[in-house]
Image (tube, rainbow, N blue to C red; front, side):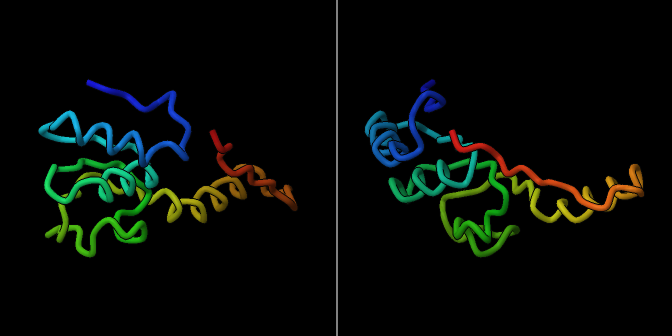
Length: 106
């Protein structure tokens, strides 16, 4: 098992190529960038990815029948942002403004 957790995101393409050289039976990719790097490196090794949205990320064009070697889970987190703000408004109705902090880049 290999992990790219310590790798810089810009280095994901070379890490994916390195992984392909090890002839794995499957690759697990967590995140859009890691999944795209793995998909670009191989069209034959199965890639199980956890992304925000497989279709929006360009990893597949169909959830039910993926057209590529990528499958997995789409969290669809962006779709929940509106609901989260609605819940925040219900909890703190007097709040006139909310600051949304995007995820920090690693």
